[in-house]
Length: 178
Image (cartoon, rainbow, N blue to C red; front, side, top):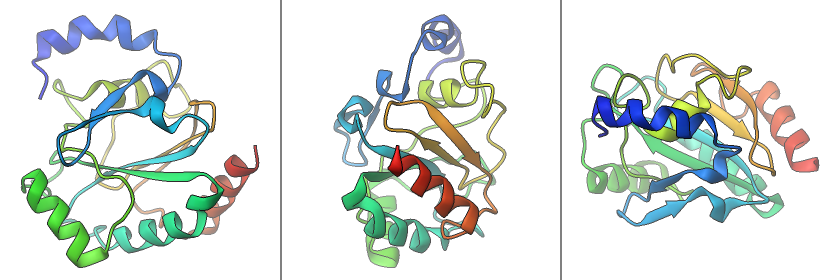
């Protein structure tokens, strides 16, 4: 978690970020994961939680990933415990839950904060002035950000939008075609 003063000092730098590729997260195994490694792919970045009413969306996200990964879609799961304490586990516990319960094979990142003064830089950028189309605090788990092949944010889908909804499928297919 970032200290609030440290986060405030980074805000001008994050505002200068040109794309999602300017950020690095940690994998759920603790290794650096520069998002630049996904250049040319379509990303669906989702803040996830293991004890949420939307947790069954893991199955739909995995199905999307399997269906479209060979066409260039990468789903990036970003665990966060910002909403109702619904992701209390350690990274190891989250990984085990996702693997055993939903057979998740898409990339999972280390748990971060997606809201508040300790928000991770990627989410400051996704929800900030640099992206007016998707700006505004994340309101709950399983908010989805669709990123195009050039690293620009294309769409934001709220928690209730299922991964297999016609709206999401159409947006993903359009992004993959570009």
